[in-house]
Image 1: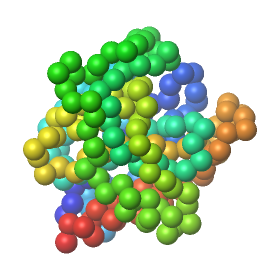
Image 2: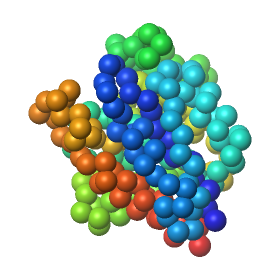
Image 3: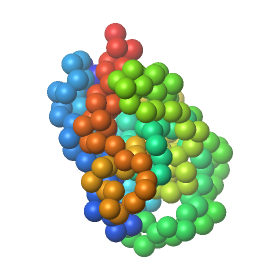
Image 4: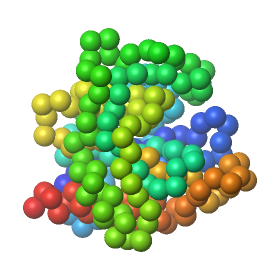
Length: 203
């Protein structure tokens, strides 16, 4: 049985929803044969989110960690390839912190690569009739922060880990007019296909 930790984020910047939160809460522990899914929601606060994520990894000892986050304006589900060693966003996190040109680890490498099979994920999502593409980086806000901290902590381990951005939910159209949205059921279908891909690779 493959133990998979999936995380999403709480809403931020006064939005009513966060699609990543709704996605992970919709996943049931036994949704994918051969996998045990552990779903958790993280705060949109730089240090607290990273500390919580790493504590969950230490507590549950998963075989794989898949972090999901919101990317308004994107028109596809986008597995991220690299986490960069930089916090740099004019948007404040949910504790009011703003970080500009700040390294995540002063002596860390410029970037870490996802250890998830991102191109396989894109292919399997597309096979379900859903839009998907590889994204090179997860930006420089809290999403990228936890992605970098996760990869940094798991260097030298066999735990697969990475980050995936998802578009807005259909229910968010009024808050984000003219931006691409998807149904929650579509995001859940994509997540199940992603996890099933990891199960198949573990055989």
